[in-house]
Length: 408
Ligand SMILES: Cc1ncc(COP(=O)(O)O)c(C=O)c1O
Picture 1 (spheres, rainbow, N blue to C red):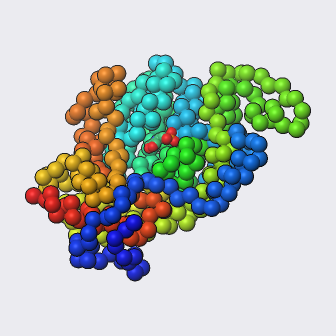
Picture 2: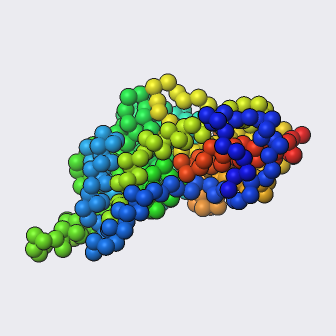
Picture 3: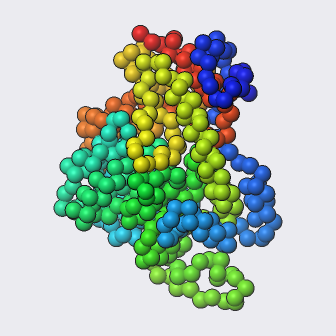
């Protein structure tokens, strides 16, 4: 529960906030908003006798394809599965290189290892956190086969520049749209710009299915290849094998994976997708409250304004802490916020600093200065539609108090 009264019209009163007592209960970072429709649909699915991939998954795929404007959508059990299957279906394998940002989650690069190829890192723009096209161009070799741009926090990458590089060098583009369900770029929906895209419905994402993901593409052959790989490499969906149409023979065509979405998950997804604009509007309101609430703190760099003709998905509200002006580092700042009963996140520690990549690729500190700048300083504040305005005020008040304690 919040100790702060609900503000009127979301306006933050700073003098009032600094005097507020500490929040009484811990505020979980990234708690999803699940409402009655989702609960009823899950219950109906549980009672239906069919939990696995079936008609609700199909419906979720159709609705997601309509929402993105992509010709095909394949529901999976994660975005990671989508990225892996995209690489596999595009025929990328041993001896190939795939350019990925180092400022991302491990999944973006791990999947490149899964197909036996080598991830090659590119640096980010330290203002937007998105992959820097100049760094992509510098990383291209004769072995490069694909680029995986990540629309960081829901801010679209510079797709004109990225698609131009891809075209010039004959590269595939796999959009990592894990944060970017609602993102638009210059009149085009993310998920329809590159060859294929992967979205995430993990529990902290903009719409959630517990675990879950979706691949979109306009290429029918790629959609087929991904669908077949997602369910053992067999030629028919499992639910059709058991349908009322009688015995349906199937053929195993490929050593596929077990990456299919279940109707139980789609039961959540159908209703979450129907609410995507309402959820976005609420997060957008909280985004504006944070911007206003932190404007007076010189120790913080706030997210930059949206680029013209784009829509930001408002997945993560990321601050940059000016650690030179503070007596603590970012990790200590996270802990001080926790003492204030505010959960926060770090998105991300740059991948080239993790032991997997240092050991396999020989990367080290100093390789990607833009990403290291972000990696050492970034902190993500709660931005779920489940929050109330009073919760957001609690976060703002707690950040003010922590800064007051640790400023030089
Ligand atoms: C940038 C990015 N890509 C991929 C993923 C993987 O998503 P999933 O958990 O659905 O596999 C995440 C998850 O947090 C992510 O942040």
